[in-house]
Length: 273
Length: 250
Image (cartoon, rainbow over all chains, first blue to last red; front, side, top):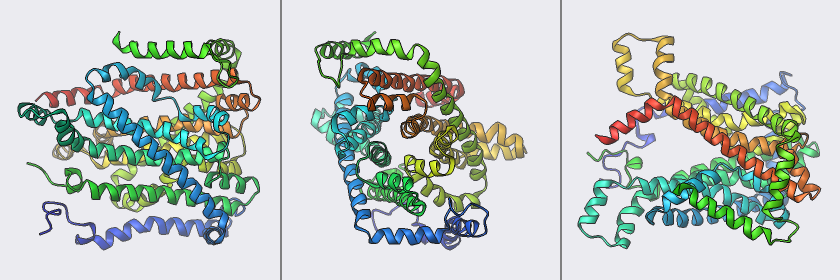
């Protein structure tokens, strides 16, 4: 028996009703596609503003052959990745510092609660002044917004260390390093992954925002250019691409989470007792 | 008291360091606060901040009502939910600012576009969290209701929705942050009136202290809404926190 799967729920495709369920799940998309194709063609909605789905898909394929589109995609992805990396590193470091240093949490609590709700878009003017429309503007915005997500989850995780395990470690006289490696880190790893997953979505939103408002090169700028030149199908197509990026990031994050956290009960669906 | 120590130190540091600054782009904090007092506590409050807040509250309100209603309906009817979930996940993954040009095309540059942007962005956390909350309806409570023959509308109103409310309120909290961000972005983009518009107009005309004072106002608004929401949460979920505290002590 595969030790990773002992006690876990059966895989989705191994249950008896996987076919009806899959069809059920797809039916929503099918219905949407049919509606989107038919409604403009039969005049239910203005076809100038709602091009039929086939037009949009055609436009999407056409874009895929242009070099500009791929340049947009790579630029957005680059900004996103760098920002996420900075945000995660900063979140982990600050989170560990606050969580592990006794008393730090008390002092920093009010500052965190004050700075956290400040919308990241408030930084846009400042960032324009410093970096102009270079991609660094986007990176700063992403780092600021995504950092809070990671930090928050790190603090939740460090708070959640099982008290019995903590007392056991103390009785066995674990060193500080041993405590971090064997107790703190495994406890906060699931929280960290949640934080990174949320941060990844936010990073994409902010990358697109920076491109739209500041004019950094990327998908967001492509959308604005298409809209202001009246290329409606292109606008829709690029928005769909942005959505697909978002979906892709989500799926990738969950897949990584499932691989790395295979031992955690939330992934294994086992009960410890 | 210790809570205020770090913020106070940081404030004094920023105040002190910036008063030596002769940079055009980062004026001293004293100057910014002076402008803040001039601008935002005066007439600009009515002409810029109030419209922004009005659009925010309208958009957020619609998003919450629609999100909770649709979420509850979806949560109850299983097959419809399973059909809708992948589609909703796709729409949720679209970065809300990316929809702004589309909405400009459909709704122009005015108030309705901005409210529409706020609604389309902040409805998703509310909707999806409501679905989760209703889906995860406590089985013991469900069976108790069935034993007592409590069904239909009264079951929905008195048991299902309150049971799902912790999750719903989590969704509302996320939705509020998103709503504030979208309020600002939509105004920065279609700069007619509003706080975001004022900030971006100041930036373009290089009125730097005014710009930073606007940023400060924005931060204060975010902070105030956060506190207001927490008060609301404490009223609405007092029973939940009490229950959890009891469980934790056992």
